[in-house]
Image (cartoon, rainbow, N blue to C red; front, side, top):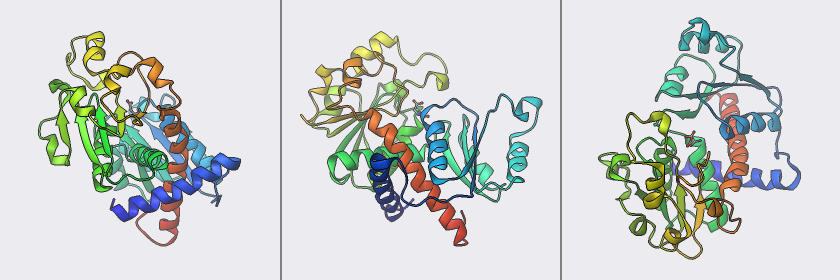
Length: 300
Ligand code: ASP
């Protein structure tokens, strides 16, 4: 996405977030569309927020429970997607443990496909949500220093945020033990650190990430206790950041592993539940844009 497209979506989501906060309704419902969500991997926030976003817009929303779908009967992923496509959805929301699956499916179906998280590759609507949350609190993304800390290696949230925030003019630092820092990370235009004290020094935003144990092969951290000691965020480590630095986390949080429980619940500094609320506004803005684009004859 270009900077202009990002700004357009965040501006629209900002207005939608105000409307939702006021009377829990989006400004312009778009009834009569069909959204099918297809989650091949666990999700709480993303899955629920796409459903709620679709329902707010007046879409018909079908959430495929994959335990009861035919993938368990040997149907291939492409056959499942083409079967659903024959039911003429407007939007297919896809999450998969393998990188590239939503992109692959988008070439096989006629409707718009939204990537709701693919492997360790991308999670675009999470990055838009985080950008909106930061902008609403700090007023801008330009010139801010954002420290993304934790399992950078396996995190699609890190990748999407690195791309989006650098496009938007933030200085992005990534902080991780050497075993969880991808080689050549500087190519993303970010600054790598192996120490929380250095990486958080003067930061405006501290974004913590979960250890993606489901994607790790072998043991990349000695123990969760030791990991917390060096890389978990507690009030001591947070002192390195600016006094008004905010704490973010895409969830699910592992309290006491990457984030101290008291900080997670600190309503003055933790934006974690605001991220969840803004996730609905962002997904409404994305659904609107796709449906309007399709109506205008665009690629969807
Ligand atoms: N919910 C986010 C994701 O799907 C972050 C996480 O699972 O740790 O990538």
